[in-house]
Image (cartoon, rainbow, N blue to C red; front, side, top):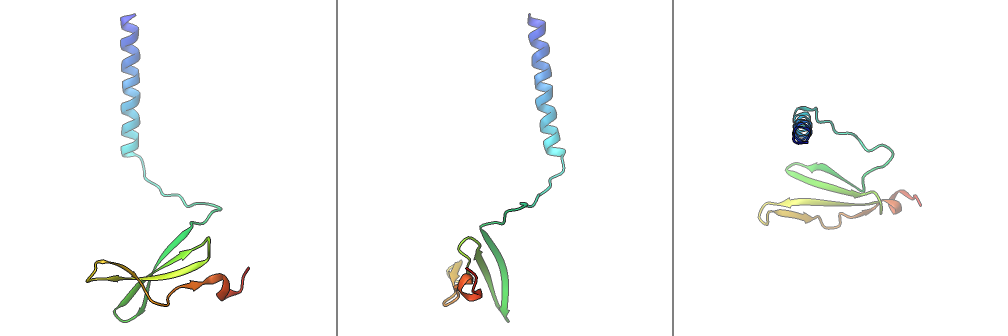
Length: 93
């Protein structure tokens, strides 16, 4: 009984170690979501010289908002009058 348990334990340990090695050595691949888009899209935008912004698009409510990084406050701030309602703007129901 002791030999059987020892053999089982060694096989189990070897399987765990092999799975760890496969995870570490295995190729890391990112797969796209097929058939479903993300709820948000974040797009970097450059609108003028020395003016960079980040555009956030909410695909569920179809709204778009622009942010700019404030170096003094060290945070993203919403650009004034930058919100767009894509449903209204493009006339789609």
